[in-house]
Every structure is written in structure tokens, then in C-alpha cells.
Amino acid sequence: MRIDLHTHSTASDGTDTPAELVRAAAAAGLDVVALTDHDTVAGHAEAAAALPEGLTLVPGAELSCRLDGVSLHMLAYLFDPTEPELARERELVRDDRVPRAKAMVARLRDLGVPVTWERVAEIAGEGAVGRPHIATAMVELGVVDTVSDAFTPEWIANDGRAYVEKHELDPFTAIRLIKGAGGVAVFAHPLAVKRGQCVPESAVAELAAAGLDGIEVDHMDHDAATRDRLRGLARDLGLLATGSSDYHGTRKTCRLGEHTTDPDVYAEIAARGSGAAPVSA
Image (cartoon, one colour):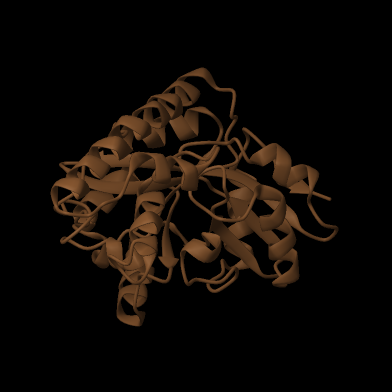
């Protein structure tokens, strides 16, 4: 089985619609794909309705968190999307995305970048606006060559010159809410240092003690040495080790299925999740 547990659609900051994404996942030879848009479940119904035969969809989301001033992302799988407390927190994060994006556009303009909010909103469309939409506008203007090039201290990386904070969950609260909604919590790309500051391993241990289920090990932003280090950390803490593409369509260079999750790990995630079930055509 080929299993990719981290992808994005136009419901947040990907370039494929949810329907296009599941069709592309099947074409890429995947057996299982998780749709984990940022702080939203808006794409789940469309993805499920378009699911090709032979492909299983894992409903999920990537939740924005912050610990001691450091941003991090928590992947949530198979949770009940109607659970009120978790739904309310997702809404708070989404509601803060527009004023935050407008403030980042203003900072970029102060830095001499002629980006406009109107263009960023047009790029985002119906999706939850985020930094990749701003980065795409910067690419169009020739300020940077790629979306990834915008995520530097010079521009919109965490604590970059044009970075603006948004409402984010405490990760311990996120774990509590995910588990309370019957879901499974996995720390996304925990040592993606190119994105900015990362939380220390001691914090991962504290999150594990609080109920964290796993950490994303095999990811494009982790080199081989980092993956080995994280695999050892997962083993020491009794955590599941996942792998995924973090696919964003044409907005990033990663391919669907570029990194995958072991079938036994996926089976354990499916067994632990009780708020929702994987969907098969």
C-alpha cells in the first residue's frame, strides 16, 4: 500500500480542488490519501464525492498552533468535525486569517513590494487565505523565484520582516480537543528548520505525555539525518512515525506520494480514530 497522510486543496492553500486532488492521488498510484487543509474541513465532502475506485480518503485537518512563541502545526485525523469546541477553535483561527494576511501585505508594501490585498484574495479564492497565497503573489511580481523562496527571514518566514502572528492554538489544547473529538494527533514536520524556529525535543516529550499519537518523520523539509533522529525520538517516546508529501499542487515542488506512511502505522491510526472513519469509493 502507498499511503500519503498530508495534502492540501483549494479549501486552504493548495492549487487542486478536492476533487482534482483525489483523482491526482489515484493517478499517482496511492491507495490512501489524507486531506488535511489548514484549520478547515471544507473540502472533505467534495473529495469524498469524487473519490476514485480503489482509493481511501482519510478526513483530517492541519491545525495552527504556537508554543512559547514558536509556531507549529498539528495534523488531526479521523475526528468528529461537528464537535463544538474543536469546531469553534478552527473558526477562530480561520477568522483571523484575513486581517493577518492584510497586515502582512501592508508590511510587504512598506518594504517596497507592490503586492496588493486584492490580488492575494483573488489567488486564495474560496480557500482559507494563508502565506502561500501571499508568496504566490510575490512570485508573480518577480520578487522571489518560487513560493518557498518567500519563506525566509527576509520576507514571510516565521519572525521574518513581513511576518504577522495569527490566532493559534496551544498544542496541548489542540491535542486535548482532537482526542476529545475522537481524533488522532500527529505533530507535522517538527524539525523543518528552514521554516524557522522549531520546538525542542523536550517539548515533543511533553506533548507525547499529553496524548500526542505521532510525529511526521518522512517529509520534504527533513533531511536524512533529521529523519533518523526523529525516528529514534518516536521510538523512544512510543510515538507513531508517519510520512507524507505535504502536497500543495503547483504551489510547491513536492509530488503526491513523495513520502509515505508504513501500512502498519496507518492501520494503527485508523484503529485509534473514532470520530470519523476513512472513506472508500
